Image (cartoon, rainbow over the protein chains, first blue to last red):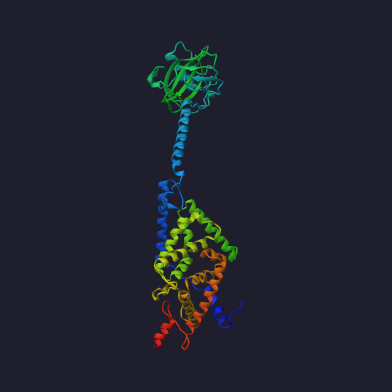
Length: 256
Length: 221
């Protein structure tokens, strides 16, 4: 690009000089002002986000955005519907949660029979022979105190008393223990009868005794084992009971 | 280790980092915008100061621009460089401030603010010439009509491409070119006159804000 003769020398000097003009230094006080202004904007946004439950660059200064026109009157209905749906889901989830019996793995082997709890959602109860000596001892104690004659003996069933998978301390009743019957208010959550599978006789409560099972308060209840008068079904419930929905800690069959 | 990346690659990396910081800011990162603005604030300060002509208004304009950019980050379209977007916000903030105070298109730089332009030492004739040239050039720039000054600042001083300048100034590229051409021509003429006033010796050591011609004439009287 050619320039007029009288301008060209100036321009040749001008353009490099312009490109090499040193930048004015940012004064520290201006830098501090900028930092403070940005910090305020950040704080405003944080406050706005905390108040509105949203995070965005608009911050508190711009305030909440309003829904335009026709949407505005619809939003309350949508919110009401959403809240109702959430509440319904929560109630349903709570009902499901309360209606189930928490049944951890028992120490007496896999479940072979489905038993039902009176007025409760059935949960698997093990009817395998109890092999845990401490549990057998506790069951025998309960049977002897409440039901007679019982012949509960440790290791009678399998003779492998050491085969219990429970390795935790088993401080069952040591000394006098409060004894509870099926109608005792303190154990009102313990069902008096267990509903058996269709066609079977109900399992009736024979006795119940409180104690300590694997470090937590529990109650051992003894039920009839169908038509087999030589054995009984024991169920260990966690204490305190949860509003009529006991948690089963262990179950199994012991000899009578 | 490796050599530093070439300027184009560095520019791309800088642009990527800018975008990342802006995205983090939009996502709620409280540190991101401060980091982003710090990366550009020296340049933006220069733009603001050369646009409005005094540090008080420049500081106000830059602060307003920072807050505006903070709030408008979610509206950044992404079809320009973040630096160009910030440049535009600063220019608009400066123009608002100039309008509010009914500023004239030509802004003189007061003498007491000459400290903001880094002055070279005067230990040699070459350095003295360079310093003189810069001071005179700053004066000449400040006397350009605002539209031409903005174009020359963007393209010739800050090194934006025509497209970037068009984006930053919100005008067509052709307008940028024509304003640059007119501004350069005027600058060259002013430069020649300022440095070599007719019938007198060249001006030396003139500070911004003082009219070299007036000083010379005052001294001659």
